[in-house]
Amino acid sequence: MWESDGDLLARVDKNKMPRHVAIIMDGNGRWANGLGLLRNAGHLAGVKTLKNILKTAVNLKLEVLTVYAFSTENWKRPHSEVDFLMNLFSEYLEREKLEMHENNVRIKFLGRTEDFSPALQNLIHDSIELMKNNTGVIFNVAADYGGQDEIVRAAQKLAQRVANGELSPENISTQLFENELDTAGQPPVDLLIRTSGDLRVSNFLLWQVAYAEFWFTDTPWPSFTPEEFVSALVDFGKRTRRFGALNT
Image (cartoon, rainbow, N blue to C red; front, top):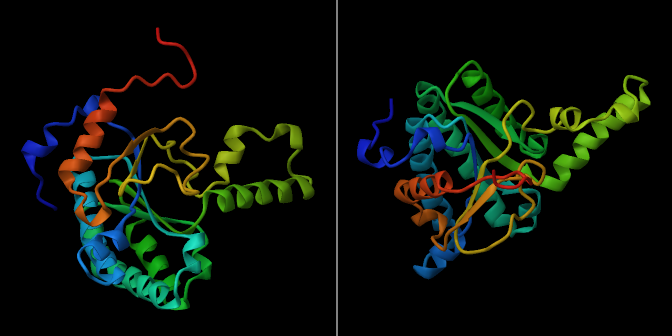
């Protein structure tokens, strides 16, 4: 079991914790450039940060942690960088899956994973199978993922059911739609964290963040610490969430 920092975790009021935290892990390239390093050095450093944040989420008994690992738009990056990211993704899963399993993590993948190489698809499948019965943190990895694409795919599935005569259009509800999303059965995002200073959602979990609280930091992802992660959770606990209603 990953050791916990009791003093750090004690800062969080467990009664005011979010159930689902999503993170846009931004700033790897800028962090590397600022140090005169290649962008790939930033991605390597970012993997270390991810391990630390997942460890903290496990020790806090967070219900769901979702990270934006690779977007549908990231294929537009230089081939050398994409190849490096794919290899890094594979190495991360191969190296970390047993430790995640030992810590009761249940890994899931959001997006079009069928577009990855057969070897990576097999590794993804094996990781899911290994951890499928775990009951701890649900760790969603959004890879080849786009929020608009996810919504279109969900709509297509419902449209096919209508075409098959299994469903009437007037019976399509919010719940039925959510059941076709990659996050089916999970709570909506309560807190969205974005690192490295940009103030946008970048096509991430567009349906799921409908009433999420946002927390932005200028800190680039490789420099993002468990202490700052806990600060975001503490700030969340101080907010009043109205979900479109008035304060009572």
